[in-house]
Amino acid sequence: MAVMDADLQHPPEILAGMLRAALETGADVVVASRYVEGGGVEGWSRARLLVSRGATLLANLLLPESRATTDPMSGFFIVRRGLLEACIDRLKPRGYKILLEILVKCRPGLVVDYPYMFRRRLRGRSKLGFKTIIDYVIHVLELNEYRVFKNMAVGASGVAVLWLVLHVLSDILGVPALAAYAAAIEASIINNFAWNHLLVFRGRGEGKSLARRLAEYHGAVALGAVINYAVFSILYGLLGVWKYAASLAGIVLGWAANYLMSEHRVWGPASPSSRKAPPPR
Image (cartoon, rainbow, N blue to C red; front, top):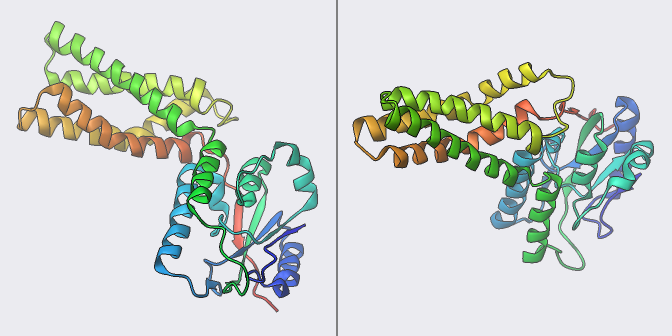
């Protein structure tokens, strides 16, 4: 089954080549991509290209499944009918980006990119506007199941645990602050893992033991933990900043890296196979 625009910005003459690519490769989805060799766009301003690239980046950051293609924003693709029928009850697209719905909810096996040139519009006008952009952002968050916000809530609980352990060890038991902070970071990591496992990424990462996921989580957040501790050591140990303010600075700088690593490495689904289509004949 094919999805495409009817205003000839999507060249219908390449449909035969896309179908041939699907048959030759056994792909579930063939995406007409503007961002592979042989593809491109005609007449776009820098602002329009920036919007497209920004939308792709947002999808890639929050939806690992979108990385199966170089052009998850494409409105031109073919999909195996059986795959679509098996998941169609789960599809609830918002706006025009049905391809994202299929990549996330239908979990196609092989996804193939096929190059094409996105043409100038000869009739009508673009659907892109402020409402379309807002709908897209909401759509990505819905497909993300608002995990990014859940992860923020988990992070807040981790901050509470970190400060509690730091207070008990440093202020009550007299443990040196730098040593106490290292223990506090580890306590917050275990807290965050538990809540991520139970709430944020529940049901994902199947086939992995809890111990393996915990070990992978430590590896995933290691960079954020190192950044956190380094910032704390510099601000508190060298500059004399109040330790809780120094801690907050380290936490903020480490959070983004920790979330992205969790999303893409620890609980991320097995990445769908992706490849470029055979050259058109």
